[in-house]
Image 1 (cartoon, rainbow, N blue to C red):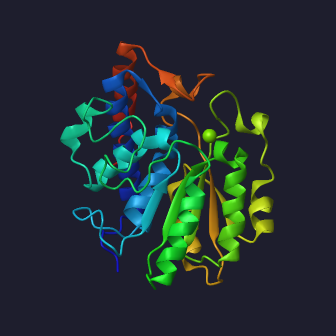
Image 2 (cartoon, rainbow, N blue to C red):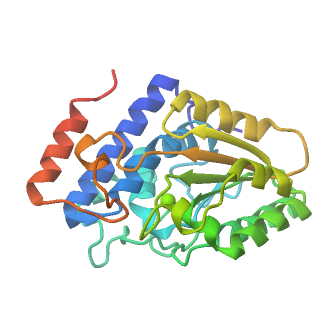
Length: 281
Ligand SMILES: [Mg+2]
């Protein structure tokens, strides 16, 4: 039962463009933030929220919804941007981002935000929660899927790999791990910190149905999300999405340090102008 209209691929590019725009506007409010991740993962979120997920924007706690778990709490700006575009959050709250009493705090917290399923932030817990949730839904005979967006940095957490094994143990064919592989974590490249390559082989070896795609290619993402859902063996699925930090804003893409971006006041306008000039038709 699809609750949201499926978008064409051109429509998805427009959605991704708007998600990036919402994120840039929120970044401007605080003058800093995890904008690199938001720009990088916008295509993944567009395909998630406008192609893959079943949900009701006006009823975010609808029992039949697919769950989208953001274990990377610092990516909250990216998820808010998508939830605003999806109509779960109103766009007139963009100006409250990160403020006291805002429903959009800088780190994602379930108690604050409609559509935010879990409180993330202590990295490495999202997939474990997703396993438990997927198991619970199966026992309730729900047809809903659980998606967990996790980062490549979280692959350095042992708890993630316990969850990877548990998902197979419990034959969770309703669980889809979406890994944002941007090869960047707090202090350095993820592959320099604790290299998880060869990623596809590892997830495969644990028993997951694994795909690796260009996470900034809408068409490739749509195909991968469709295959993940349709795969008919009783095991969990992983989509490794290779994304580019700060995607779409060249002067930010070129920065050496992108984990937490500080932009000078005038540069937000510059970034928005570049972005607005590239609106998909
Ligand atoms: Mg990363």
